[in-house]
Structure formats: structure tokens, C-alpha cells
Picture 1 (cartoon, rainbow, N blue to C red):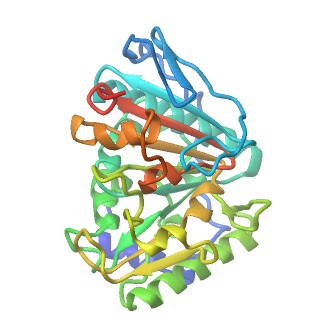
Picture 2 (picture 1 turned 30 degrees about the vertical axis):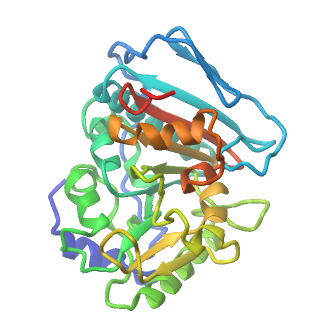
Length: 324
């Protein structure tokens, strides 16, 4: 696929003007299963907050009672934690997980809605641009959005769009019209309203499913986490963590630069069918422990509020899990 410049790609997809559900590139689809050996999972046995990992295989945690403590599984959802010996193994497993969900939803709905975040998450997707996935995934059915974005030009180094384009999107044949970047010509408030309008149009067109709660139900949300436990642009102690009406909110005083951003709210995040929380590095071990360990002050970090209606899978490397 010829590489397009970030600005050209963005101009095709910045708002509703880019919406073109009828355009599809027919690609041959093979099985997304990899022939390579399964990634190594770290062998240990621990118990934390009702979850357990025994030996080398993680165990699903079924439904349990709802709790005011954020980070527990909902009655209808389930939580799984996988710990890998290396970040390389994590990336291999994440690619297979994503490819398998892509095949499932393309067959079921004829579309696959994927929400990206910034930071190290994009690096962890690198195995998707390699065999067997680059040729087996039906990229023409992917619809890509962002859980949060910095209100900067798309060619700015702080742009999550630029990060995803350079590290992932430019290497796979996702249709430009199926990539929904924010309109960076608007103010933070205007960009948030415009993005919410775009998502509502995607829901109305059945590109994105709708949850029973009335919020959009994305097929897969790929989340990273900051060392302070923030997800998306929802930061500890900020009022936006309690926003429960808007789909997309704006922030002008982010504690982490750049200050102006837009972000999905927790009702939208938690309405997802599948959430992958991808965390690597010992520098994030404290926040992982707060979310999954037996914390003395539960519910203090935004990551603890990730509690989807569907399924939540944590992808951790050995460093991130070192305090569990």
C-alpha cells in the first residue's frame, strides 16, 4: 500500500466529511492464527483482589457482585490478567488477540471498530504489521478511532494520530476514510463536540454497535496506562473522571502537557465489548498493584474505574507485574 502523508490521510478522515461506509477493499482472508510458538507467560502463583494466576496460565474471573470499588468486574463482564516474561512476548500475544477479535467481529457484524490510545500502546501493536497478520486480517473492515487526543496539529510530535500513523496505520491497508481523527482546526470544546457527533453517526450507521446503556459499544478498546494510573486523558483527582453524560469531553488544564485534549468518558470506555489494558515496565508497577492488588485505598486511580460491560484483559510484562 503506498504510504500517504499524515496530513493527507487526516484530511480524508477528520470528521463526518470522511465517512464513507460503502467503500471497501476486498482482501483475501486466511486464518489469523499464528504458527509461531505461544509467548511465554511468567510462571508464578499469586492472589490479588479476587483474581489469581497459577502456574503459566492465567485464569478467567467470572461474574461477581458489583462493587463501588472501581476496577472490579461487572456482573456481566469478566476480567483476565496475563503476565508475560518479556514485552516482546506481550506484543506477540496482543497481536493474536486483536487479530482473532477482528475475524470474529468482521464475520458477525461486517465491521470492526477499534479504539487506540497513545504512548507505548502503539509500539505494542507492532506485531500486527508482520506475518501472518499483515496478510490475514481484513483491514478494509477496520474503523479506527482514538480514546483521547491532544488538541494539536496532526503533524505535531504530541499528536496521538501522528504516533499511530507512523508506528502502525501507515503500514497496514486500513481505508483512509475509516480512520477518524479529530478536527484539529477547532477549539478543544469544538473538537470534542465534533468527535461525539462523528461517533453518533457511526452508531446510527451500525458501524459501531450500541450498548444497552445507550453509549457506543466499541468492539475493541486498546488502552495504555500512565505511571500515575491515568487512562485516556482521565487523570487522578480531575472532575472528568466522574463525567457520566457526555460521550466525549474536553480538558484545557491537563496535568500532563499538552494542556488541551479531548477524551472519551468512562461510560463510553466501559461500554466496550472488549478492553485490552496494555502495561509494560517496572515504572508502572505501583499503579498496577493499586488496580489489581489488595490496596488499602481502593478506587483512587482512574485505571481502577475501568470496568467494562464486556471483557477486560490485562496484558502485563514481568516488570509491570512485579509488585503483585
